[in-house]
Length: 296
Image (cartoon, rainbow, N blue to C red; front, side, top):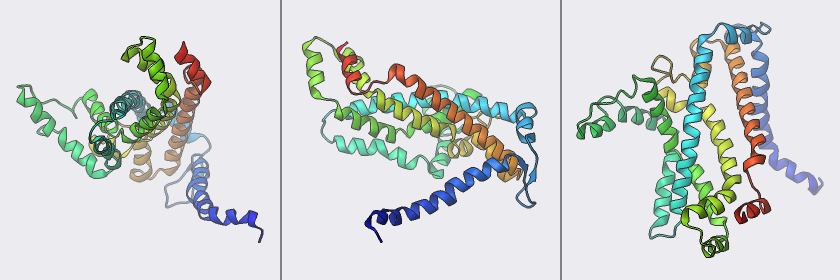
């Protein structure tokens, strides 16, 4: 066998996994979205009935869309800002800094764990640690799970707390910024704040762009934390798209309708991703462009 085909043997396991667990389910869900399918009986072709019902008769669809948008627009900017802030601090060469970097990354490893979601629910319960701490200052317990805003804040904080992966990417990018640029800014009389916005930020825009896209996609598909903490309450104010898909799939066994919702979510994610890519030409600077921006 020719040596040029040896590499193909190494990718066969990945190729099989991709075909079986990614491409096949992807195509199957699209086909099933045009059917009525309850797992037990064979799929029955239903045309566009699932999509018509979704947009015209299902009130849960619109409430879940609104809840998902609120969650994404609230969580993603705060998570990126917090990750960048911590990365900026951890970029300084301080004693024991590696220990701090490791400690701040741990939440990203534990955050997706069901046990952490359960713990998070207990922390924000009526008699939980958060309300006990508030009570020390003489304040009344906050209704975290009985108010729409409180419930959204609770599930968003869990996602923001898992900032470690974005932080590490920001930290790696900060270390790649040439020290000469900071020295030149200091010689020109630029202060810390001006240096950050005129030197650091332009050079970080490609990394901000990457983290924004990745975190946005993950946020749109969030399930574990919100499901375990609020289960969509109160009054479905935190009933995200992923919960709507889960309920229709495994509670009502309406796989065809769940597949249709999944494809609408896919289109929404694609649309927002394309908008971010389109807007990147106005605020993302690469190599020489970033140099020109910093000089300006």
